[in-house]
Image (cartoon, rainbow over all chains, first blue to last red; front, side, top):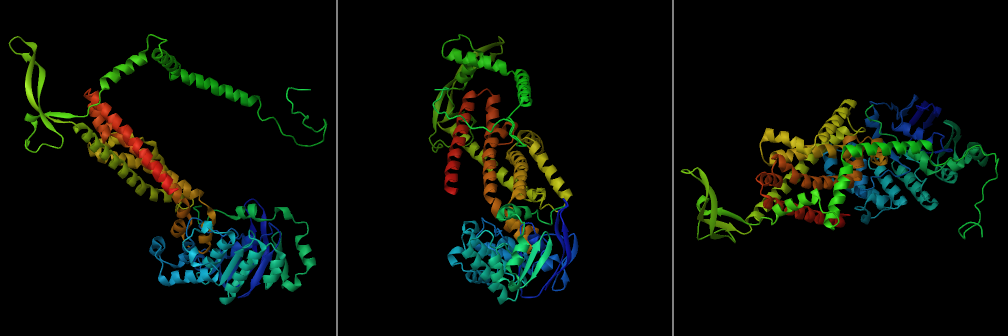
Length: 266
Length: 346
């Protein structure tokens, strides 16, 4: 389903984010990517929908290579769930979810906000599925709690019935209980559609619990690839040995990854 | 007790010769002092060139004169002369009945009356070639609030000019902003062109633009609206564009990731985020235009300014006073309304 072929990424400043990663992820698999900060997890994910252009190698989705000519078409089949939810905070929950349809609706419809009743119905269904209530529809996305915002993010991601779901540390800024709920939602919603999930995580326990497969990354390379059962404590230590835990969480790394949109005038 | 205060545990410091490799320097050094001195010298020079010293002397003199310390002040003399000429403000209009066409004496305009007035006129006696005072009695139509009404109507016109100037500037600046935002402009060329155009619009002051537009469109509000609109479009275009550039990238990235396309991303990922600022900028422009609209008539671009200029040129300072009072009330009322509106909106 997703195939990375000797993918490499070197940032303009010479930092090696990914060095020669080849992976094959079959349809319907929930694949967790683990690893310390700066291991290249997010960069790898972003290669799948072209938010990051690889220096060498290629990504194939369902046999189609991701490049500038296939980008528009492929992006509609790949949804993304973000660490910081990336909702339009001042816009209503309903509009945020409907925004998931944007690539598929006409410009007039999009700009006027006049979505088809069936589409609006779908937004309601998904919001119901992720555990929100009709009272949330008209509320501003930014006014919701973190967990609720991520639920909206999930609803948005599934609006186009994606074949691939990229989840970039979807629970890094949420508490453990809510993290579990959110990952359950992503996993179940993906299973219902037989969608492949590529999810980067920081929590080893969650990775073992939810992953069909765990890929451990370190300094841009895959250093572990196997089932949760194979991911023993020794493996965990090997993966994280000497890594700087204190640099890990949310903030800076995520901010640094928010680049200018790719279609910026060069 | 050592030292002046009672506080006084000495602040512990590391012993001399400690081995730390880095240290925190003093917050400023001789370079800063030198720079400050240079700035001071520069201020003194420019201050002298712009006669700031003379202003200080004259103003001190004026204040002294008012409180009875100085017996001569040019400023006070000038001001009191103007004050005398301008007082009282003109409220009524009177017009010779003979000059009014189709006056219906049964139905006079509201509040107005017909009066007999004695007019003293200087006329030349053709025999003696001397000026002689002639007095004649004429019938005049007096409208006690006539001039206030005239000014009011002009004020409304001013308001309309400001309103349309603002509408025009918003209409112009929205597409401009799209092309002038670095991350949305289709190409480097469109970006530079749009930015250049915005700078051009902004660099030309309203009054000067209006001066030329009056030549093109003639006297009246068209020139005023265009002048205000063009200048403000430069202003709004710049600020709208910069808001688009600085908007939170996260929602934009989310929409880009699913391939939403530029326009839709702008509409769903950027606009809702920057809208409050847009409203604030536009409100500021409206406020500025309202004040500018009163001035812009000075070059003939319609509104109250045109009336003001006319009266000023005819030495009718009483009328000028009425207009100035009207402008003050106008701006004051608008400020109050705006403050209330803001309190309600935010």
